[in-house]
Length: 367
Image (cartoon, rainbow, N blue to C red; front, side, top):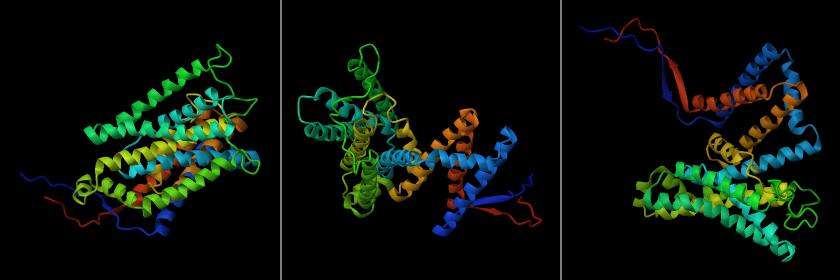
């Protein structure tokens, strides 16, 4: 006996190439819908004027000159970590270890600042900080890459576990170097002598980080899109079998790419310890090693687009904190608004890649 089955009311098909204007319109529409929904929730749950809330978000990020510099510096740090992870992601090597690679880079810088103070000239200390930070981050990326290349181990699990090892290493040396004894923290390293403190540019302590971010963004864009090694990364990411067929040594590409990813993360650790915080803690990167994964994915591994996705994340994060302070709201409410906006932004990618078609009523049923 045949059962009559109704056709579904709609079906989903993959879109062809969508013009950047239409893609931009979809994203802008998603943000507008998110803001409308957040405004309704704000009014219903708190009775506040949503326009005042949005104004506060802006002021939290750019309300003063100092806030503007800090926001831009935070964007630069998040962008750098995202750029570091991107070559591996393009290769379909899921490097979730950015947090640990940043930590060991910072740990190497702190070690130079603490152990070499008053022993060698400041310029030598800074030079050694640069070299050791990059080397430490690269080494932290090399370990999971080596096991992946040789024995095809799970890189997601390996890089994730390396984060915990790095955190415990920092925790251990924090106790070893603690000042004063028994405090459980380092405090500001070389506060009186400023040995190992990275130089300021034009008298600004923010410009160095921002300048390095600009340089590495441009370099990464060129490397990934116009170099032979960038081409090899893309081919390996598409198909390892194809890469081997055309003569690319996949194992070498995996290891080389992770050395680059880890090395750039090491530079971030150097900037955080030597240029921004002048100390080392287990939370010095503020979880941005994980946030950078989302930033890279949202930008579809495009270094230029990452500038805007990094801006969005930092802008919302700093603005959300200002909402809690200004209106005395629970931090959770700010996080809810941020989550809604990000959900709409990420969700709109579905409508960029796929199209929903409503099925016309034919009056017939499928047997």
